[in-house]
Length: 115
Image 1: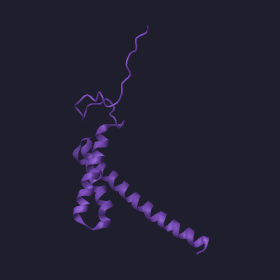
Image 2: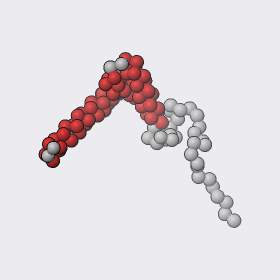
Image 3: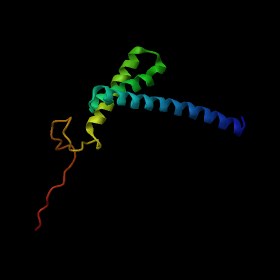
Image 4: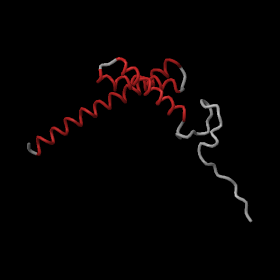
């Protein structure tokens, strides 16, 4: 195999993978935007819908409905949790979705006494 043939093989594989990833990301984004538009709410349920559809698309290779459903549920749940956590994975002090005080999740600065 020459270098040119091997480069063509590499480009073919990369383009297939890039196309697949683009389809999954586009499915997530389109579903999340449509869900927000139809429901009129900006909450983690939109991310769940996008993650669910993207997860089902990823699992289509198996052609097994049970695997597609479970992958969709797990992907949607993970996307909803990330969306609910906010910009910071530990929380952004906006208790809109989590109604508990996250004290203890990460160390907070304390005032030190001067001697």
